[in-house]
Length: 366
Image (tube, rainbow, N blue to C red; front, side):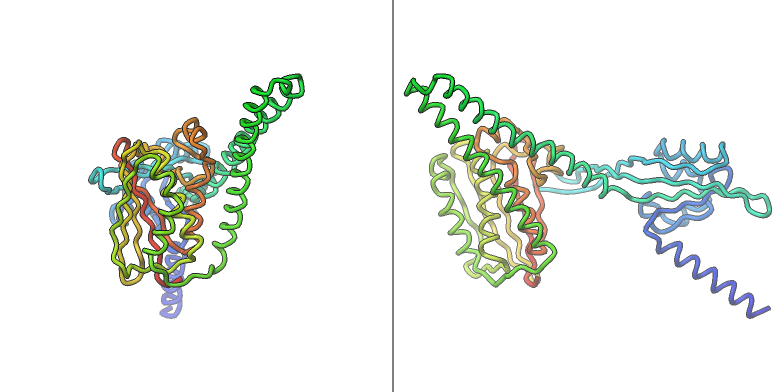
């Protein structure tokens, strides 16, 4: 009997370990929706402690009406249900513009419920919540990308075809009109070329994320000087002041060409959208295991609702202005993938009318 008891206890511990280790959020309730069991994933999702979860009514754990409705339908129909549900998660964050603010993000879950009658006629309902947020996000990005790339390529192609047709219909005999139309055709062709080059660059960078790129310790001052030299003409044209703040021995572990491309894109982006006479600041800070690069401007800033999407391909806050300034909508996506290729992280601090700051964190060992 002792051996059987010990075996039963051990089996129960094993089941509990498996239950807790599952990545899916699982909740078990009785026929009145009082929680009988809840695993670690569900506790993290609903941000509660186990002592407060077990014995509580399901409505005390979540205020998601769709989930509560699905649970009620399961008990009423005495059969399992399946549905994709949206949860809003509040995320506390701080930045240099506002302290202790909250942002929210959408979480998508595939919810499956089961209705079980035990041998002693006791009722149990099991809710399994599988996180499909990443799948949904990737699907949205894919759809947006197909729509955007079609639009971005169609616009210059339509313009080129239109002016070629006009020239063929007789406008070529007017030298002034011909030169004007050829300038537009050249401009639109250059835009097409820029989009295709950026798309090829992105494709190449994505392949780097699954392999090790060649890096070496680099003096940031040398890369920064090269970046400012490349952007010098645009900087002078808008009378923008560039301030640098880093020590002479500030070092980054990076691929020089890729990091230079990322910083050129960021500086070029700031110059495009900042009004004349603005200030761009480049800072560098050394830590024991990583290097921190900050690039800030005092331009128009980015609305909070747009911040989560600025690194997506072809996503621009102001599409008309971006196209007018010669942007392809791929510059920040390229920056993100360069940072990821270095196993680093990039984030944004921004607020409308208060400027934008990009923060790049690069590990010293890749």
